[in-house]
Image (cartoon, rainbow, N blue to C red; front, side, top):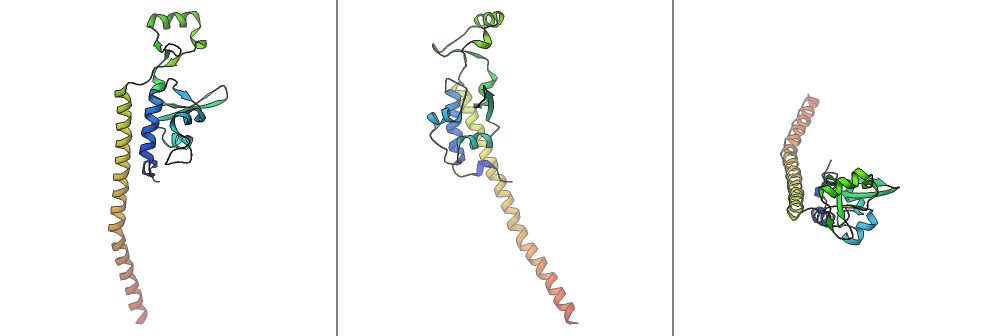
Length: 168
């Protein structure tokens, strides 16, 4: 099975999605919504949804009110704590007050965007995964190129033996 990282232009598409999804106000959106920021479709797949599904190491899905939302997994590690109208992160006390009052679940809050260093770390991980996939593919081609002459020689020797013993 071939790695999706070996698809032409896959790495630039992954890097674009990580940057946009890591810094956008909302952590989870429909594919149609993500297209507004990422473009109609990636260069390496027919749809952004296909790209997200091919890379569960970075992207996930979540169903909410019957809608399939796509997420950058690292963003889901954070609680919803940012007021989307003011872009201000609530304090621990404000968060606790919302939870104590039972209003947290109903509150219109977003998860905080990733820091530039977190986005950079995810991008470096994607690059490393692509490098490893390419190296593995090269090693597999190396063994095939070594094995092919050996198998051909073995088949030739077996055929020669069969032809020679058939003449006697």
